Length: 261
Image (cartoon, rainbow, N blue to C red; front, side, top):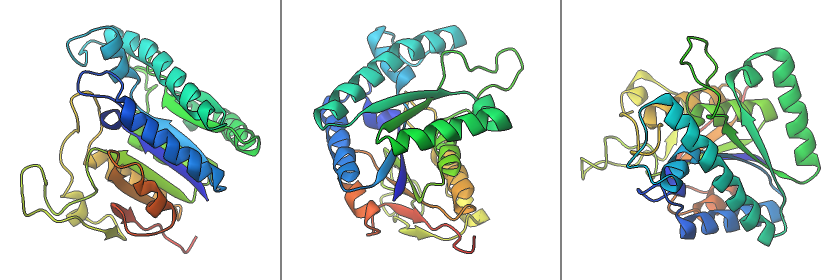
């Protein structure tokens, strides 16, 4: 299958912003094994700002745009260095692509992006995609940002014609209520339509270093389901769940894409 895997800051980094070495190594090992099995993989990776916070010894995620941009520029280097080193240990080559909104909204630039993605996969490379947070801002009133990587991963899945999008987060999936506050919350294993009732289950943003939340994941689900692509939300603390997800076995919450395409 052609699989897009989105990994969030909460999976990649400790609360300090420093790299969670054990978890990232486990994730790369599983992804490399899935690639060895014949799957074509694209990794949409958050974490640049979060890791930049750690490298620059900032007290937390910055509020002002220039510092966010600076943290992203520093953190992106660490991200790609880490991926290049770890995937290289398993014989896989990574490629970095940093996007802005115009790269997927303007027809010619989107065409260019789709072309390079197709060729990278043909050549056996593993594309690692992030938004270009060092330059993409809405500060001057011009919409240049996609906003967060849940939506970005859904857009990428559409561009490459993915069979499956997996969003690895800090939660096991979609629940009947917030499991952090309600001990009786139950995991919803499958969703076939994004109804108002499903939307009502979405809360606010996620971790202190990240920018996503369940609402952005439901938005991503709607985008890919309309194209006939399945999406799964699963816990990034257990990367080995990707084996079950790729095999179609129960794991997390699966949003079933329309098959009448």
